[in-house]
Length: 365
View (cartoon, one colour):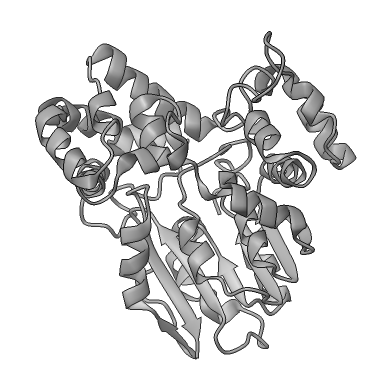
């Protein structure tokens, strides 16, 4: 796998709509395996009360962030959690001069390694929290700044709408189609993605991808679909990109929903943080549910196609695996004893609010 890309704090929020896994995961299963990412993609699954959750990442920094998120959910009130992470800029009922993130952080029960890591970076997260600190988030915020400030594109009227019909009308009236198309052909080009976002490991390079459309066309078409089928004020990713922040709390991701946070707080799940390669760890246990993000896109095609056959031999009937892909998907999955849920793939893509992934959902016979 491309270790160089996954060796730092790449994601602090990311662009995965965890509602897909949330809806697919049955309650009270024995063991779940998930890529950590920022933690926002896997921790909401604790609300479904699995007995065990194994969280893996090749970057120990991402695991420290996952640990911090979980301890914040467990030890802080809902409002304090939103403030610490950066979803809110103040605490209701707090002092008029502002609130202290560092004081909340000191209440968390972190491992010595995670404590040392975040102590060294306090100047980075204390002013505005954690959710927009990652390399990925910084990149897309810069794109948004260019689009809003330099191309003078104002999206507020579209995001102010409160029904899909109203939004569709505003989209046709205010969407800067020519400027957007010209802009996205540059910033979503293979060159820019590979050099600035993926640091030379972009899975959508022309000699590597399975998606026929170039990245810019893929994004243009998927974003247009989202603006015509989903109320974007409910979409945190679209808010960050086009408004520069989460301006409407109805768009908060699943990890910031109060019912989810309260359920995670009560969870008795045993969680393990695994620092390493998923191909080495995945076969060690029989998992009921496996969430692999888009990591398959970074595997050699032969290894990607054999991923289901690498699972533990005691994997039970009904177990599921959820894979995302961006520009590069498995081409010939070995489905022995498994089936691909094609209808669920389409359901997931329509539910997803990011517009950048295709889904591949598998179930053990």
